[in-house]
Image 1 (tube, rainbow, N blue to C red):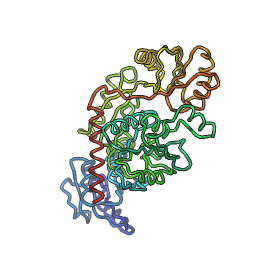
Image 2 (image 1 turned 180 degrees about the vertical axis):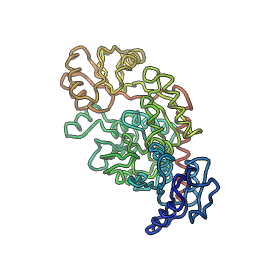
Image 3 (image 1 turned 90 degrees about the vertical axis):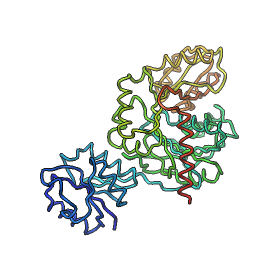
Image 4 (image 1 turned 135 degrees about the horizontal axis):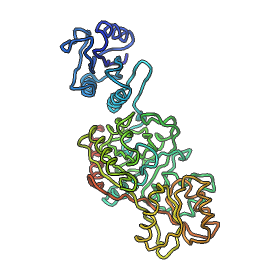
Length: 447
């Protein structure tokens, strides 16, 4: 029998609540109730005797459910409350609190379960997850890997993606420097050579295990993946840390000892406040707001996003960042065609940055890297005006950009998206803290 904590309110007449609790007891062990508000049909001094089981009251519904879970360690929270005590939005907040503690949350016509860690590794793990696609997880993951490597840490990246390999694929990025020609050859074999694991290996120069996944639930569960098999492979490499990289808003099914959450600044408050944003935030040991520059988000919206995060996690480390291109080869003096997935409003800024930082001339640029038809049209329009292609390793970077370069006899230079800290807590300090947390927590669970 599963252990149940029931959510009850004062808008239901106590004998009706007790009837419902008795019905639950037919199939479950109901260990306690959390009183989450309402006074119409119950006195504020009503005790547990009224309901025939311990009743937890807190300063608010959130405090009551957290205390009940911590005291009674249930398998599920069953919501017997209703409007107006708890709204649909409020239920997602309560569900997030339950799921973050590994407890399912069920009501009359819904059932939410926490994403399952289907494997625990012998190696400490640091998860880098996000609130959606194109928020900068892979770029930040590569930066974290480079930062830890520079500090003498031996890490391996475990990446899952929508274009990952059928079998977990190990790339020894610290031993083999993949070239654009190597990636183009893979693309011609039908491989998605711009998948996250290739980007991680090329940009971070550490061992990388690539996996695939399909489907993502509201709380981040994947429908299908081969990540557990990939985790077993990563676990054999004798590294000090496995960096587990999420895909979109999906969370890898691997036990994480510490987590960093990447939030896109342009996504706004709903992505952390609503639905299962609070759940992802509750899992995190640090938050990185990416794209936090004026061209992408106004000061008021950014302040509101920071305030929404602080309202849920007052003391969590938080860094404001944005990205700038970093070519992996010398492009000084070259006439450049630059391909990116960045928002169009940022394109001029990125082109100027490339010119000033790397001494090139950007003669054309495209933000259509994730739109193959538009990208091919941009390349055709500017054919003959450039002598170097510079591209992020994403989307159609290899099978369109590099392929066009090979056909025209023009070299393709890959570029990293390097995070630049704009404010908040120091990103490097956050990375070091997350590493120490992962090591410490892993040690405790290994005892």
